[in-house]
Amino acid sequence: MPKKILIVEDDNSIRELLVELLQGEGYLVVSAVNGLEGLKCLEVQPAFDLILIDLMMPVMDGYSFRTEQMKHPKWSRIPVVVMSAEANAREKMKNYGVTAFLSKPVELDTILKTVEQYS
Image (cartoon, rainbow, N blue to C red; front, side, top):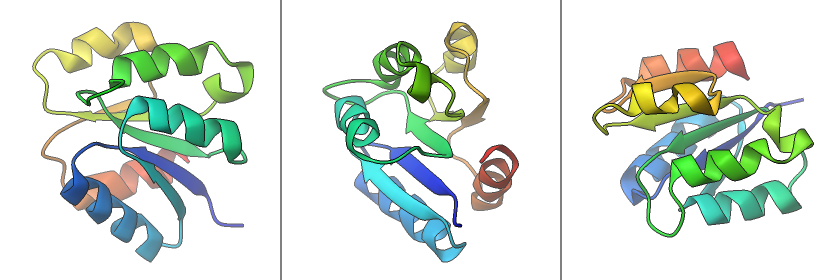
C-alpha cells in the first residue's frame, strides 16, 4: 500500500513540484494551499503517513495549523516535516513537536530522503 502524504504549501510552483516528485516515487499525494485547507483535508481523508508543510502562508500559517493538528488525537500522531525559509523558524518550531525541519531552498534529494525516513 503506497504511503499517503499531505503537502501544505501556498507557493504553486513549489507545491506542484513536490506533488510531481512524490507521485513519481509512488506516494499518494494530497495538497492544500494553506493551513485551513490542510485541516479540511485531514477531516475528509483517511489517515496520512506524513505532512510536509510550509510555515508562512495566507489564511492559516503552519504554526496555527500545527496548533490545531495537535489538539486532535488521531491527527497529532502524524509526523510533520516543516519546510521554511523564515529566519529563526527552526528555533520557533521546537515547541510544536515537529518531526523534522528543512530550510528552504531544499534539495529534492533531501526531501525524498526525509519523506522516506519519516513516512
